[in-house]
Amino acid sequence: MSDDEGKEEKELDLSSSDVVTKYKTAAEIVNKALQLVILECKPKAKIVDICEKGDAFIREQAGSMYKNMKKKIERGVAFPTCISVNNIVCHFSPMVTDETVLEENDVVKIDMGCHIDGFIAVVAHTHVLQEGPVSGRAADVIGAANTAAEVALRLVRPGKKNKDVTEAIHKVAAAYDCKIVEGVLSHQLKQFVIDGNKVILSVSNPETRVDDAEFEENEVYAVDIVMSTGDGKPKLLDEKQTTVYKRAVDKNYHLKMKSSRFIFSEISQKYPIMPFSARALEEKRARLGLVECVNHDLLQPYPVLHEKPGDLVAHIKFTVLLMPNGSDRITSHTLQQLQTTKKAVDSDPEIKAWLALGIKTKKKGGQKKKKGKKSDNLTEAEPMEEEEEATNGAASSAP
Image (cartoon, rainbow, N blue to C red):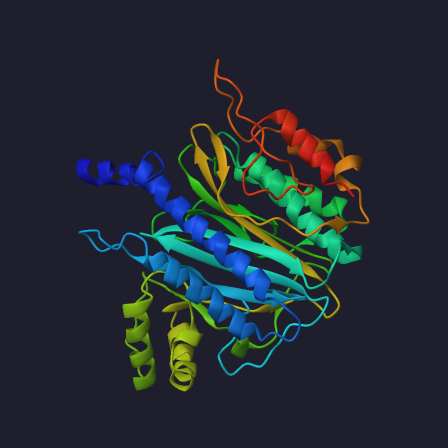
């Protein structure tokens, strides 16, 4: 690497205030988009309509940013809106012709992302279509995902290792009598890279291994937690449900079918790097062309996976900046009130100790920041800054 390349690389991490601003701008947009989508999630609402509204909002809001720059800035959807219900684990973002609707008491997972100049903010949230507090196993699985996310927030910090996070979220899952869903990875984020090489593995097993890694200052991570009341071993039931793909930039192949070449050319022009939904392509031609592209590894599919009928799945994902003054969680949404059957926080001293860890680094000789209003749940967009607040917040989330 030349000195110029090294200098450019350094300028594009969180040591640059411009980069931090772009991450936070993307986060603000996706947080608002998530709020919009939650409001649209009502019984009998068509899932595809809600997904399209989420994507349209992100495109519109991102498109209004950085318009007057001399150099064109790429911006828009970093991950298409997905709405996965009950035992569906993830990535359900149906085609326009799909008639699937939401129903009362559905456990709804919303997953989406925005980027500004390739700086990505992603978020996932779980919402139940009901009035009043969520109880029973639905509350348990959401509580497990949320508590694991809060523990991970405190352990994804400089000096800690990825395996520390894996071990901790396992302990949280067991405390709620839930299982972590296999195959879910939390990735480091870089400019135009949604799946960086530094990875946190949710479930370690012989089939899935990742390199040991240590978190460092000025890194960014998408922390991805998926919990299930089932066995945590989801299956692909119907390949036709897969609609989300990402261009594999390091692969080449001369496609044989005309429809494949047409679709791949369109994808390369419109979605050269970020994941996209096939809904944005002409459906009949896309169906034919995408198969050959996937078969020859030109596209990476994001399959729609299922737990067994009757199982419930919860998904929490957030973006965190590892700043010099501590961890800055920039995407989130407050949960509904939960009445869990498991008192995980109160009953396990190790989980309680993790949740009591501070998120921000205390300033030497400086005054404490004014404390904000505390929530009944550990889900505030603004992280707690003092260890005392973190302890109090952890206690308040117990049922």
